Length: 179
Image (tube, rainbow, N blue to C red):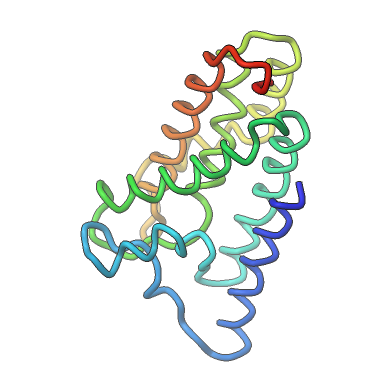
């Protein structure tokens, strides 16, 4: 869980540097299919355009991340890293040629992991968690469509697919380490 809080803290440090020093780190976002955009695979989720943007990523990231790390601590860092890096790599490969910043791809990845893991795992605890996430975050499904200019719906869609894939893959592993 400390890992999650450190990540969110780092997001806010980056945003604070931009805000208080008048800097603009958006150039370090993902610019698909360009050499310069490769750096965004690592940095894009740490960069946010304004206070509404970072808050709208922080709140669900804390709730969903807490749920992930509390209930699935044995696989939480693996899920987080897959949703972080695989989502960003796929955005770099497939998204439209525009700068993509923010942690929403990660948010979608974790949310859809939590939703689908219950359905694939088919145990009571995981199904209850899935139902709770659907209740609170079922509306995320609308974010995967290109309905708002300036919003990276590609990050949302790809994050959702990566989260669902990760849930399917990890639920099939027959290891004592997997919850």
